[in-house]
Image (cartoon, rainbow, N blue to C red; front, top):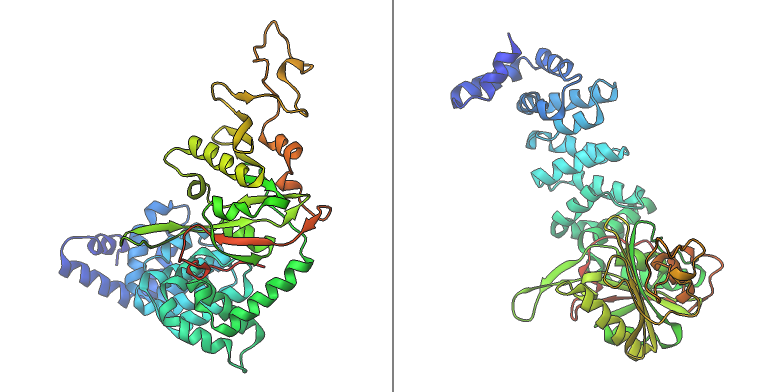
Length: 425
């Protein structure tokens, strides 16, 4: 029997001929599968489709054979993902077992299969709980599966949370699976109270760490003594105490689309206002939702000026090394007094600040060859923040901390429970 001819028959438009080829493949699985897998050595992923189609028709025995070949090193990591991508409902339990694999890549292939098949099974639930229990960051395919199956899994996960026979790890995994699939709204009153108590305890002992602006970042800074105006000026709602770790993660996390008052949709995100750090509070969150994306430049100026009316002073920093963006603003009492924006015309506006080194005063400045405006400085956002307030990347054990951080939502009547996913407090 020539496998090549069977593969051709399997892909043809003649239904009867294709079905007959599938039957012969299944009948000869013990011979066909090893030969197919021997033939994938050195084959590009795009050219694996005929073999993957044949293996799919053979079903569960082929699934097990692909995994065995991968473990022996006969199939590469990327190839096994392609070969496992098309099995049908007969292999649902095998996908669940694969999802429970500690190997992150193989686990992702298992959850991908469960997602595609929309598998609702106890085996799938157990795989989700086990993965959430052992992973500080829940893999995104497991997160997708938790959200897809949340309505069905939620009662069983809540029951597992209260099962005295379940191990602590299992109960912890059930909690993470609930939050990953449905946000804080998925928890019962007892678990919500537990998390709030834990946050209050962690706040007292946490060493704050903020993301470095190595490649990209944006943030605003206001004086710690007058930060309360941030919530009104930025239109923030439902603020809650939060640890720095969870606040940063939430501010960088996904947005949600929620119903609007007119029946349309509106996008909501979360904003983190840090504790007072060396006298300053920083604001992190979804840039476009806070300053507007119709006119980002005007939105940044308007936002920092409005904040400075309420807070006395406000600063805004934006960095994007890949896109070439580097800018900072300082506003006082409703007016931008100094700003820098790389590659704008002009780049510098306002009077130089006392700490600035001007381009014309730089030791490397050569008036014969270099051109600089009299008020042009030399400092971009990455350095300016150290003089104006503080560098987020240098926040750590030596930073003076007062109060706690706040997590707020950009839209009213949304609440924090609408955001799926775990936050590590």
